Length: 385
Image 1 (cartoon, rainbow, N blue to C red):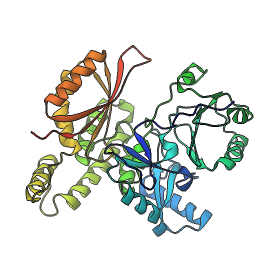
Image 2: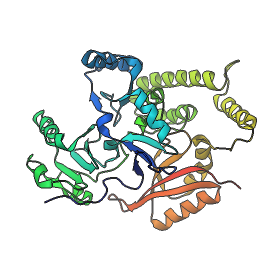
Image 3: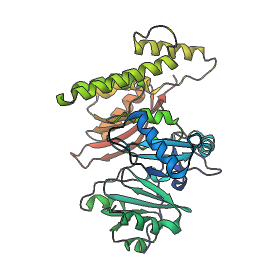
Image 4: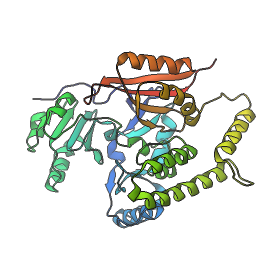
């Protein structure tokens, strides 16, 4: 028996290949075998840049890889300290970037697969096999190596509750590993101990290969929500600290000082190179306005912070509940909202469009919890008047 022959990736994803046409907003994929996810043995008390330095030292000791040829992107699937990182060849990544066109992001193919805790997702795409081992891990391999890779993982004590197989594959052969095999994502939640698998719901976009790795390190600090800019990071972070548990006050104050220092450093480097920094928001806004005015003939492009300001009043006035807000590139906003019904979704989209925002509905479905309509939408810019 073989699995179904549908494409393993939804319409948001396009494999990066010679001649491939990637539309604006789509996510380009490269074979996961060329961008492995490695696990490191890192001390619990080491954080920040020092933690990355320890990982780089281990990488050099294991494989003799020099820092100047390797991009390392730490990955925290949840709020815990990271112990895995995406490893890629710096020159190869530069080549991919030049071919990605208008892509919204560039990821290894296994990070585009739906997953949840306890589920391994396996997808066949051409000559590549992508395997997602739960939210925090994954790998790419050739078809001939798949059985050996799965056997090694299972022998190491990693036992999923089920395998979700997407694309044309020999499911009977996979069933020999002693794990239940599913071919329909809708059946996952019916399996004991598993929830509905989700795509791009585990901080995958912090590993965007189009972005500078230094930005990835900054995004690891966003454990509860991915924020739009360093300024918004400080503002919304302060609100989160006020609402936090009293027993964590000391830890949160230390985190606030770290973020404030990072914000000051970025503002000094990019926006206010000279003179005192008195009002970060006002000074950064003034500098951005001046830069836009000075750009002769350049097209006005709204950043994610501007879009958030314009959309916030509409979101606050709606009956929907904002679950998550994210910006992968500092220009567009990705929002996850629980609306009362589909009519409320239509009303929200119309209100955003009426306010001059370019909005795209990604997905709207009835939530498993409470009957609300779980809505995913993207605000990609401002509509020219």
